[in-house]
Image 1: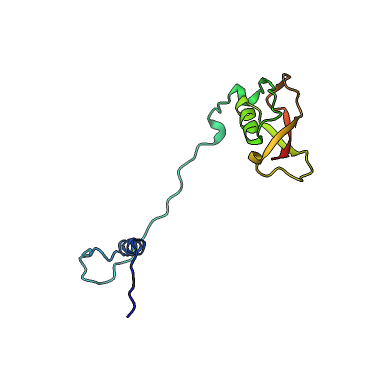
Image 2: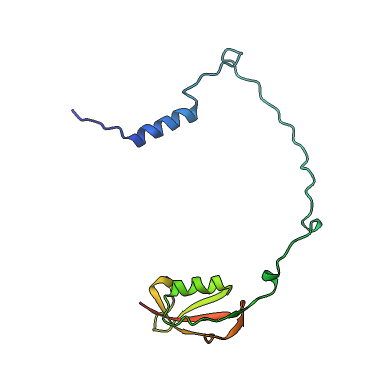
Length: 137
C-alpha cells in the first residue's frame, strides 16, 4: 500500500482553486436554476481627454543645462563603485572599455579602472562622455 503525502502548497493551491471557482459559496439567484437573461451593456463615447500641449510642462534647469563637475581620480577603483560615484556626481554618459584584451566589460564589479578619458581634477560638463578603461580582476 502506497502512502500519499499532501503538502501545504498543494492544500493552498486547492483552496485557492476552490475559492476562485466559487465552490465554497452558494448564491440564490431567485429564478431557481433557470438561465439568467443576457445583460446588455451600452457603449458610451469616451470623455474628452485634454491634450498634452494644453497644460504647461515643468522642466528643471538641471535636466536642460549640464552642470560643471570636477572629475575625480577613478584609477584603481572597482568598476561598479566608479560607475556609482560618477553617476552620483551627475555624469550621465559613462562607458566601460576593456584595456586588457577582453572584448567587452560585462559585470563592472569584476573589473578595475586602469585609465580614464578625462584627467582627474579637470572641470567638465556633466553630459561629457567619460570612458573608463578597465582590466578584469
